[in-house]
Length: 234
Image 1 (tube, rainbow, N blue to C red):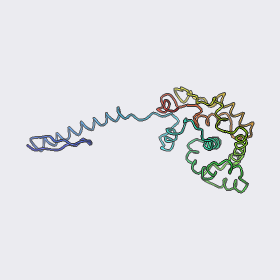
Image 2: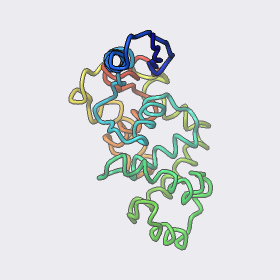
Image 3: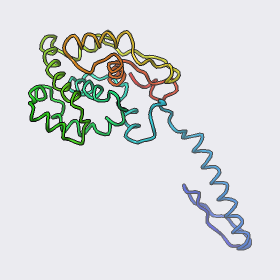
Image 4: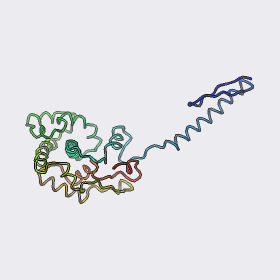
């Protein structure tokens, strides 16, 4: 009796049939079974991850959402970087800044505040001619002013990390928003941070910008409750 071999994409097995026609029909039937089975397994066994509604399907955005946004950050250089980038975002979308982040790191010397604080007019002109960053005169000037204010603050308090985290008592606030419509644009804490930074000479540090900063560096966990990162960010 003729034998034919069938593959399900995982293993192979043989069946015996009494004719070539029957073998062909058998192949079609079994292939249809495995196609249906694989579809069911995919939809039930490997359901797509649910992310916050603001996160698009762009890989760069998803990687940022999945590995950075809302994760508590205490590296002082990275905190300074995020403060500058959040200010640069004002009036723009975050994905615009995210796409330019590596250019910013190159143009601003890895966000070394001591080097940025020494930028002169020639360096500012070079930055304003750099298509890899947002070429806004006020924002570029603010980055330099903020570098100097950051260094002064660190000299006075010893740690920018400790100072900035005081606005949430040193520990992340874990919220439980059901949708993005529930997430506030600013809070009492972001307002207090904004006023304190502005008093010390920082620019582009309004309450809304400060709350976006707090979300980004994990001072608050604002992943919505349906997002797979809500329970895992700590």
